[in-house]
Length: 112
Length: 112
Image 1 (cartoon, rainbow over the protein chains, first blue to last red):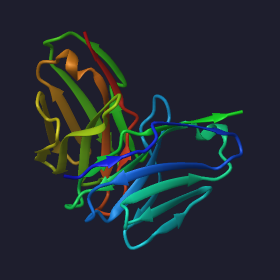
Image 2: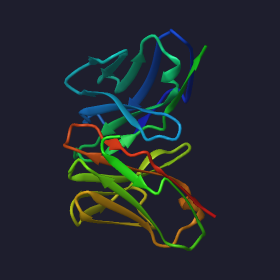
Image 3: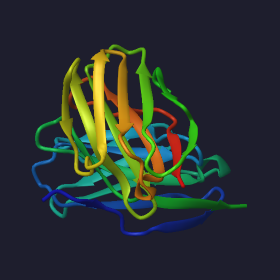
């Protein structure tokens, strides 16, 4: 079956440092992946996505890396700021294209 | 918030009572989803809709029903609420395959 998971449930980083959040997936046929940020009391917010024909995609201060060989996805946040403190989770689009599988999330804490 | 409104935002109800949660979108998207979010489980799909009057079950559909009589509204009903249905419920919409889900800000439901 399909599954999406995260290696680290919590991550603490110093303000200004780079953060890396990891995700493993099991369905080698998946071709679309998304990272979400969720702040307390709010719904998940789209950050960045990547398709399986790419191995890297950059946004503003964020980069997503996809390693299809080992079925691994990571989110890199450059110069982490206090406003980046949140739960981050990855999502994988299923084979049919209309449903998604979500990981449990990693809580990122930014230390002053 | 991608034009998604969930109501109510908070609700406390007693075991055995019916409860209806509403999701309203202004994007005219075809696909709408109901998820529940619980600690340690991440987001789990309850039901989804792929058009007016077209719905299907997700992985945790027992005890829930849905209706979609208009493109913009997707209702989630707990026919007889139980304490195990205490959770945060999120509605999401999808514009097209290969694009991200966009979420509302959730409804926190407590069943006493």
